Image 1 (cartoon, chains in turn yellow, brown):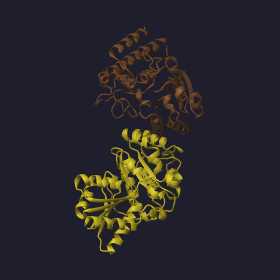
Image 2 (cartoon, rainbow over the protein chains, first blue to last red):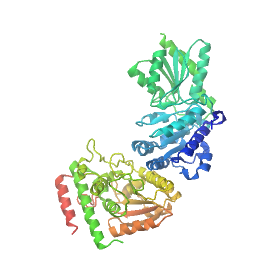
Image 3 (spheres, chains in turn yellow, purple):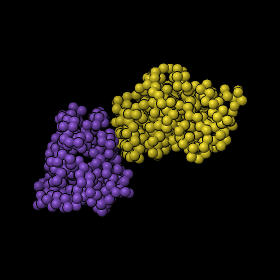
Image 4 (tube, helix red, strand yellow):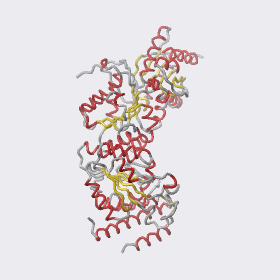
Length: 319
Length: 277
């Protein structure tokens, strides 16, 4: 049955629906949570597969360890908690029991970056990408809409090895057509352009990048926009292609600039084709409470901010 | 129930495994002798009486699995596995050397017969809970055994896993605490007192026994009782002696990891062999 991705009110619903559909076809799929199953709204999975859902209570480290044990018996566990806890709290367990032990744990962190909004600085993971990037061989996804969330969840299940996916919990959008194909490690060009390339990840920044490209177009600036839904491994081929094509890049992420997507892009280019790269993201700060609108302005993550960064980068390029 | 003849056979086997362990570490010059030697009797009775395993098919699906969460006991685990025929005994000479299949801490991807990778203390507890849950879901009729250290039980994750194991009523999960009363820095009572471990596990909803961890008859009876308990996971607290059987280490405060010369090893083994007639 064809999916109507426009029916999802929230990105979490696309994620849970994808896991439930996977479980219909594969009895190895199980789900775990650490007392945030209401927040990710996984009730439909729990009702359909009560024996395949394990709520371990408020113990994220234990959840990741239990998921690793389940994996060692051949099962495919999707384990969810907020991204702050998935990364900071359970990092050693995910590093060792899941990844060093070569297990197949699909860790999902919701409320990434500023989307944790009213939960504030304590719950605002800006550092999860940087931490997770340091785990050898780990695949890191960040979907930007309901279609990519659903399909990247499928990709996570197909991949033999652990994955980390940061999933927006509340709110969603549809940027892709229903039949859009996704490939692990291959970014999608959402908007082609010649003057500069904007490489973004996640709904907040991909949406801002697309809006910025529209605004720039009116001023005669042609900006390509790439949705880098797989943060690791980086799509080096696509980065190189657009570095050659536009000779200037702005990266956008809802996370620390340090060791983020932008760092991966500039690390790669500095060794292979030195190119001007402006990295947008959180600049060595903690989060705070606020609405998404407030936080986007506070941390300079709006479409207008992207436009400013693009123009400054173009000015440097043309110097 | 074990006969006296059975006990003698197990004691002889334990001496063989202790001998291999001492030589393994002496060959390298130093290693985690204390916590390795204290679990040898447990490993001996598990591999020679209770575990449903096949050294020729270490990954067989319905095997009993053993998670040695105190991963630094690796040398004793390797000696036991080599003796059991999982891999050539000569491998023991490669402990901790570049390219070895026998790293300091247990690694399921390197050593045939190791069921889970451990080394960061506490983590094996959750992994064992996950294995027991997974086997139950898959209707695999097998036991999951877990070995914890008493010092390791200072890690919070152990108690998170304790709750999870009890909550999910994992009757086929049988854990042991190698309670040798010592940790790296000194005695547990001095560093971070664990209090009454058996009462703690009981209050977490586990079936608990406390026995002499070097008494084969007691070990055998306790495992039998633990298997008879089908509703709760089981904890068997083993009162043990750190460095048991490597005499220069017994009763020493600094016996977590020790330098061992080949001469010291030979002396210790001679004395060890003299204990079993």
